[in-house]
Image (cartoon, rainbow, N blue to C red):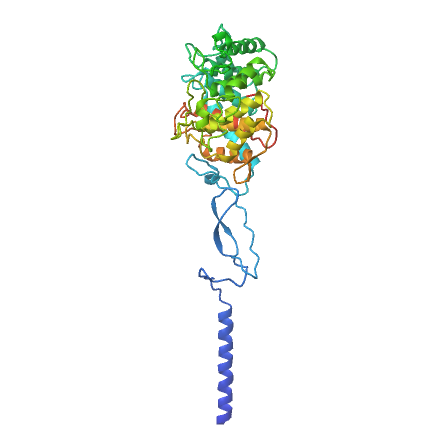
Length: 459
């Protein structure tokens, strides 16, 4: 039998029991996990459970969710953890904005390889017809461009599909030395790109005679004294589609590409006559161009090029309210490249003015001056011309240096379709045809190869 406790002892015992109960309750509560809830203005006191916030990756400009601790005066932010791309992220589409289709840890080199491989696969497996042609209903030039693209991206000439394409092109060789479709009005264009294709495949000299005759044919199309046009004529030195079509900067550019591919001397008559014509297509008042329309050019158009100087001049980009002819990108790049191929010095005012125009209008979301029209033709000539300048960067109007090869690689990757092809919804100049547009894209991409220096003279 326990002894009875007096009032003081009972009070002491009760106090001890209550203290013990409170202690146990406190320990129990401290061991329970409570999720961290933050308001927009609250600041966590630990970095052990970082808050996931939306940030923009500098490479892709795409919003990603990365574990980053909110910055405070006392805490250093945790670096984003790179995320591997899912199959959905690596699939590109024409509707995706530039830079959004690839993950932050995907380097330009890997992006180049993936994009080039997909384009090559499309042309080989889906683009070619049983007779070896590509979109022959448009022009044999498409076959020449697609075959050139495949050869440039490492498909061996001995590949049976390359052999079939070359055999098809051989059927387009004409007795006059031209290489064009029957009854074609695009003889300069088709012969120029076909000649360049045969030149790529001429390792054993089997196409020597074909190339020699094709060069002679092209020179015969050039507007000069033989057609009754003297130096003071705006026709002089230019090249048209052929079959007595008036000359323009695009066809003249293709003609000079062909001459460059076979190592024609830049000081030859053909090059120098062409340089005269192209200088007259530039929106720049110089002794080389004194046309009336040049004096009406806006400051923004100065240094760029138009489509043709013949007559009162013509620009596919239209006119200014004052009657000037608007410069646009694809012809400006064609003009600059043609001047460089013709031996015009980099310090020449014509070259410098063209580069200034390019810096003011550097853009890969559109063909500046033309919007989406001729977009992939523009990408092709953009890459080829900048490779010819030897400049790894374009200095823009705001004094930023743009790595044009990396920029173009990203842009082409973004626009590539799921099947590896490209196409342009703005279907002008046949850019709705996936074979033609994929050839343009692949030839442009060839100049962006981060592992090698592209050959500027061979396409």
